[in-house]
Image 1 (cartoon, rainbow, N blue to C red):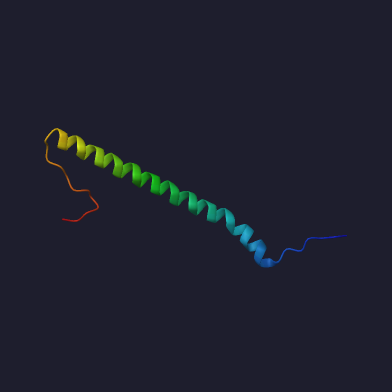
Image 2 (cartoon, rainbow, N blue to C red):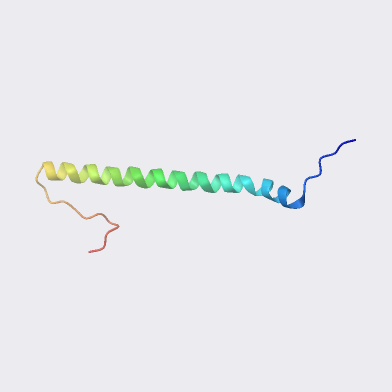
Length: 63
């Protein structure tokens, strides 16, 4: 009988793969949230400029 022998290292990589996928997914979601947040902030500031109101600095940039 032919049996496929999988080395120990390959098995450990297969077990770690779901964690890698989950980490990549979390990273992607975080990036999308930050892009949406910054986009909303920029749109809000553009509206303030159009209304000739005082604009704010982004919370990320220190004074």
